[in-house]
Length: 66
Image 1: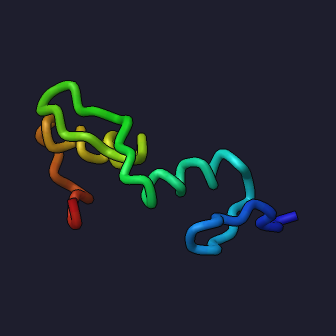
Image 2: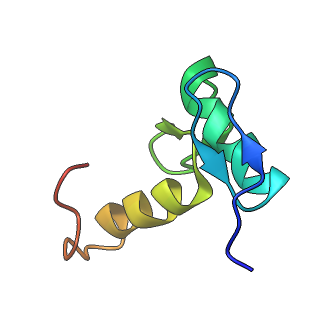
């Protein structure tokens, strides 16, 4: 358990699941499939979009680095 069997062929980083590897590969491809419905800004990770959405909700906590 805890093994990381899926390796990125670009940078060599290992992941526990193929899904995590697929998400990671987007950073190398520049793909940003998640779009903010309010301002149109795009993100590579769903979690990044969710965090960004706090800007429009008026909640600026934990937004450092965006």
